[in-house]
Length: 110
Image (tube, rainbow, N blue to C red):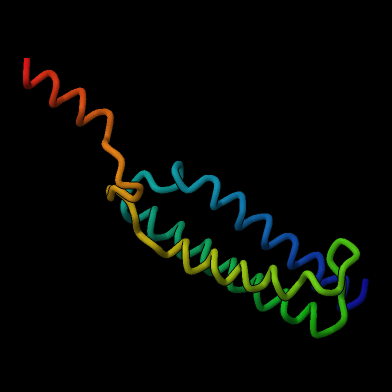
């Protein structure tokens, strides 16, 4: 197994692990401390993935038969790393009313 094949496997593995952790963030963030740890691990994996993808592109490697896909994926990995560090727990992101608050307000009115 050559250098390029190792980079390909490493890039795909790191991106896969980061994706699984990203999908599991609700479970991983039971406490404030574990949430921060999960966010940092995801960001770290994404940044390492981005470096690996840039190295893969620079060494002429391919992902899924394309030589040009590594750089856009590296940029996406950096964006995901930045997004994973955003702390939005408990904040109303969409601006919609919380159904629990609506039910509580109705009960108080009655």
